[in-house]
Image 1 (cartoon, rainbow, N blue to C red):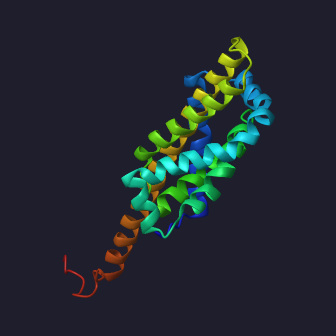
Image 2: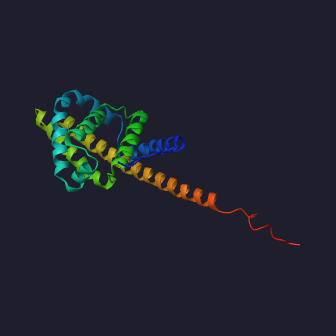
Image 3: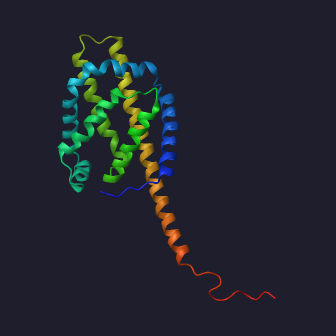
Length: 207
């Protein structure tokens, strides 16, 4: 695993940017209070099926060559992926989306974890699609009939998975930029430290 070190100042600035991006993405996706209420309402009904959803998604991930290499390179097994993804999936429904502070913290921690194990944000689309398909299947299979409320909840699931994917992609890219800038500044600092002062060869005689 890569060592990720971000200063307190960079962390504070990044979380502020994530909060702004979150508000922008919510607006673009038309994610609003009714969607947040849909997720909270459906959570108790869908909660018993979430362990099976996580297990199914992890199995699909393990079959993928890219993710299987990531797991192997970091000494991770399926049970480790389940341990990480299970709380994330529960938080997908439990998070207070009207107060972005919880979501910002979750996205920040997730992006750091992805950067540490080498998961490119471009690789997240397919796993997120797996989660969405599985959740919609569970929801529809438990519904007595497909009414307007069920359709509304399905739309809320599409919005929230899209929001998480957009924010994780944005934040992962920002983390990469911070790490690159940090490395560049470190190199510049070493060069400046090694550069001789102007007095080493004597001051020029301008008279």
